Amino acid sequence: LSVIDNSFREVRRFWQSYLANGVMVKTPDKESDREVNIWNKYQIRTGERKDSKSGLMAAHTTCFTYNISYGEVLSDRDTNVNLLSIVMNQDKLARENIIHTLLGICRDGSDFFSKRYPRCIKSDFPLWGVYAVVHYLKETGDYSFLEEIINYHDKGKGSVYEHLVRCIEYTLKMLSHRGLSLIRGSDWDDSLHCGMEDKGESVLLSIFLCYILREMANLAKNSSRIKDSARFRREYEK
Image (cartoon, rainbow, N blue to C red; front, side):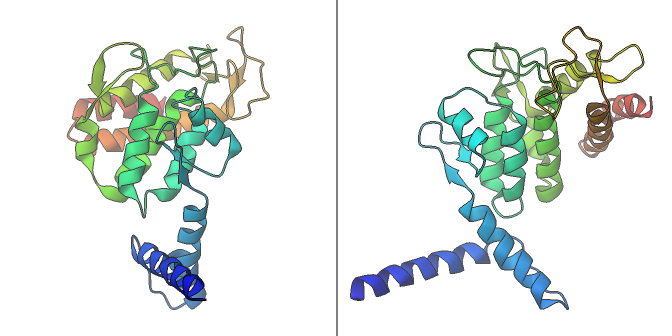
């Protein structure tokens, strides 16, 4: 019984310490407080772990865990979407994982997909790293992150900000004659392979690109990149 009691106390200490970190709210609604302060954090913690091979956070989705375990997908949508859940309470871990995903970006802004398919044909992939950084900065205000120098996947180095700009510029080149984003290999829906001849368009990705341009205009302004802010704003208003 003593072993059981000690184990229980260790578990209890762990959860008390973990739940005390990060955002805590106090509202007139006790159930809302419980949802934010306890259950959201609990669900995030039980759904995450670190992959033993890559050191990256492995979330609850099978796709994400498989990809990083085999060292294939670096900067995919699943990686960036899953890490958004931890920014509020574990910003350092989120930052570490964002850097890992940006290492999959090539100098032309395209996204390394896997050893089998070196260039990603999924039209939305290059923008998810931008989305993750925007979300991270909104939560932390850590604009120094934009100046950190990291490798491109193929050659050379650049700042985090430069990685983001290249991703946007690459996506802006993939527009139809009507100004909509080309779907190419697929957008969010991986089953849609209707754009390989550069004819199919994606309304979903066009909306996402507009959102990214608007957010990047604000990000550039907040980091004193006024010319870039104006450029992103013009592209957004098109």
